[in-house]
Image 1 (cartoon, helix red, strand yellow):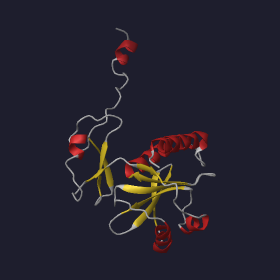
Image 2 (cartoon, helix red, strand yellow):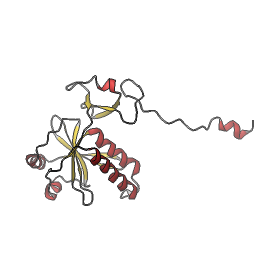
Image 3 (cartoon, helix red, strand yellow):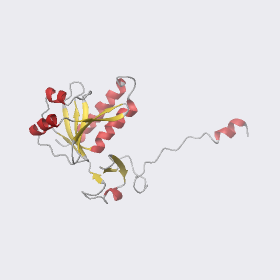
Image 4 (cartoon, helix red, strand yellow):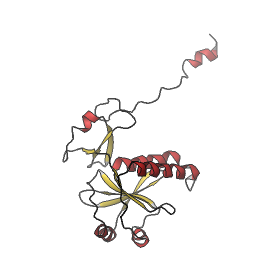
Length: 193
């Protein structure tokens, strides 16, 4: 055995990581359940058996998959500007006590408190019922887009993950904007209208 052969034993490719339920450690597939811990503002991957253990009102909340295109949603440019978000892409999450905006970027989701007056005006124009901590209003105003979705919060974090993995340089690069476009095409394709 020569030196190169000896080193090859130690330099093997790692097998692909298996995603696991963060509650019981069972393997989960690429499409799996999620639960939210509202007290810690954390989302955890879960197997179906563990997700079913948490009815509404439990310490952890089950995230039920949802994607609904809100074709009649009203949000003017002036109302958007009043929210003071630096990017035309954000999701709005309601907790028991407030509404918070999150906008994605290369470092993940950045939290921004929403002006109560600005949100009240948007809420007055749109009958939007967000389930606290597990559903969000996802707004896409990138370029000429004016799309609004009622989605489960796992979709928002999937979008954040796409940005984190794909962002290059100062403006994100061409690839990230293509992937964002793909995300919204898939979302629109699977969304209820």
